[in-house]
Length: 284
Image (cartoon, rainbow, N blue to C red; front, side, top):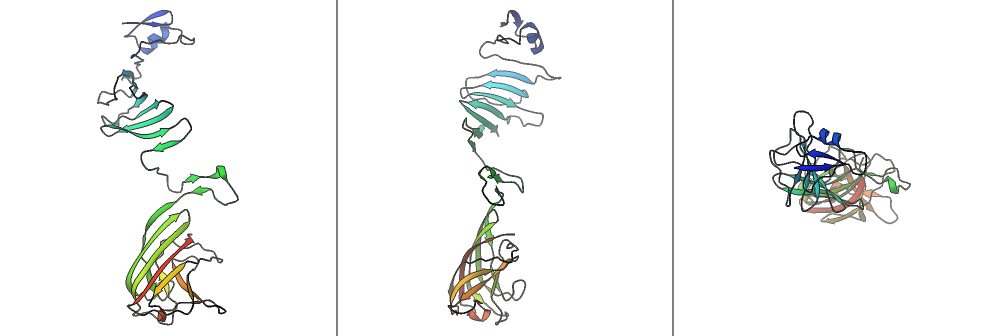
């Protein structure tokens, strides 16, 4: 078959360099090809580029060339394949209307990424960031010290009652805790059912250990959260009281006109007492 290239003739069997040599590739009549045909060039010992015309959905095969331009009923795509690409899993990048679209295949193609003309990106899976990296909001910077959202996490933790901020004598009972961490802000909930105090020092302050993250090391740290109790002897309003640079907190007991005090081990009725609490704090 003969094809017209500028004012000279080129054979369909001509190589890319032969076609370019016959035509004026610097003017408005560069290379004119019939519909459904395209460039099949040679680089090195293989044939790395071809144009495939199809009227349906592109189906990769073991014979795919490293670079193919594919026209389908959906749009126009570039198919990329190297020596390590599994047969039938050739990635595609192409245009559908005004959108840039990425497809990958594990036997059948599915859309993985779409970027619209407005710059909005839609992913079919999770966005995975390297450790220490995040979403940078510096374009809307205010007076804060950081504009980088670099962490989000959900999980569980196990509260334990003790008579010391670390170590000490640990009580028993049924415990459960949940947390959500956004940046360095940690929101925790937890409870103790039928707590037992056998072996604990009755006159010591009561601590709940096991927070999922160490609190920030600031001398002015002040954290207050809600506490609900059952079968616990109290004389005032109860709130959580977090110390700095630890993974434990106390329960503050506030009485009008009196200095702040804390629940002690002796305030619990062993085997009967319940504690429920929730608060937020900044992690180190």
